[in-house]
Each structure stands twice: as structure tokens, then as C-alpha cells.
Image (tube, rainbow, N blue to C red; front, side, top):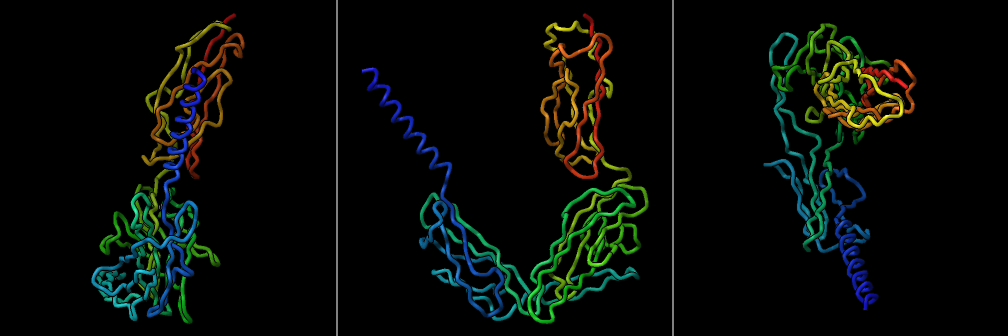
Length: 347
């Protein structure tokens, strides 16, 4: 009788395990096509696949979304998308000249982005979206700038990775650089070097931070000269001094008092916070710990609550023992934080 009950419980447990595993692997749609860049007036067939197992899935409703008020193309029930015959999107671009005068011009885009969406007609399946670019050659399809955000000290340089994706004979990769302080609207653009400058060395670009020692946020914009509606931006946090990790709520020198070697020292602990001087979340890890100290956690992201405690007294030498705990940022350019610890050991 006991064996039958045990077997029944085992069957129920395995059934629940199978159900939970199936729920963990919830089915979702993905959209496939031969290209994500479609010339005006041309067609492209999109197919939906379901994962798992990765097979074609036809029980979907196809829709598109794009820029309001213009022709973004159409898609039929079988997933065949027809791009608009002409791009009619225009955008007003305002530039501030060196004379502090504003010049406003209306430009017609050479490329637009359209979102293809596949929605399952069956419940419980996650829908899918895919961004495509419709272009009228010659055109710039995309401008990318990396890193998208970084912290830099005054007078220092940061290498920028610029990529201009284009289509059609005669498409230009020419870029104009713009600097905005405190926002990206035209009135925030500066030309006098107070926001820094771009230095080109061969095919490489570097942002050089301004020399004046003040904290500021600079938006660096790389705008296509062929199509001013296509651009990329990066956010530079300019600092007067090198950013660093900081220990807060504790003295930089921690004295754990006197202990006897071999005794139980449960409760000998300290808590404090680890933060960044910029206020941003920075990942860190402990790279140096004395043998008689334990740190929890060993890695985290600021702001963090940290605990240090005496882990064992057996490794202590009679007399004065000292060590340094080092917290190292995972982000380039940050100074380490250090905490000195002391303890006196008796036999």
C-alpha cells in the first residue's frame, strides 16, 4: 500500500515538473526575411516561425506601424510587404550657425523605419516585431555611434566607433558633428569648444573633452550630410576629476580591536555603502581581501550595501595584523576604492 502511494506521488510530481518546464519554455514568434532593407516600390516576404521548435507558423495576423501621416507601405495576410513608391516624410531641421543665428530648413528623408508585427491568432504565444528600413537610393540607412554613454575627465580623449550604413551608388558617408550641453535642442548647441571637439586620426574618431574644469553633460551627435534625418548620439558625462568608487558610512581605516587567536568572533562585523562619485550604477568586484576577513557580496552594482566581518582568527599572527580590501570597478576609467583593516591578536 505504501509503495502504491509513493508511486502515485512520484507520478504527480513528474507531471507537475513537466508542466512547469513547458511553461518556462513559453512559445514565441520570430520574424524571418531575406532582407531588412527594402527599396521603395519593392516587395519583401516575411515569415513567422514559432520557437520552440522553430517551425514555420502561419496562424498569424500581420500589421505594420511607422511614421504617422505618411505612406509606410502595406502588408497582406500572407506576410508580403509592399514598400511605398516614394518617401514623403519631411522633417524641420534647425541649426545654429557660428554667428548665433538659427537656420531652419525642411529636408526630405531618404530612408524611413517601419515596424513589422506578427501577432498569433492563438493565445499563449508571444508576438514578434521586426524593424525594417525603406530607402530611396542613394540613401543612408543607419548611423551608429558607440559607446552610447561614457564618463570622461576634462582634457582626456575617448575613442568613438562610428558606422554609416548606406545604399546606392553615390551614397555619401559624410557626417557633421554637433555638440549640445544640457539638452539636444538647437538652443543648446555650442561651437566654441566649451563642449569639447572631435579629433580625427586616419579613419578613427576621438572625442576630446573640454579643458575647463567643470562637470557637465555633453550630447555628441553625428548627423548624416546626405540625409539629416539619420543620426546617432552619444552622452558624455564630463568630470573635473577622475570618477571613482567611494566607501560611505564607515571610516577608511577599520579597527576590529583585540581578539584571541582561535576564539569564536561571531558578530565582529561592519556594514557600509559602496557608491560611485558620478551617482551612476557601476558594477564592481572585490580584488583583494586579507585572509582573516570575509566580504559580502564579492561583486555587485552601486549603490551597494556591503558587510565585512572577521571570518577566522586562526590565520592571524600574534600582534598587530593589517590588510587592505580593494573594490575595483568593472567600468574603465574609475578609481578603485580601498578600505584598510586592523586587528590585534593575542595567544
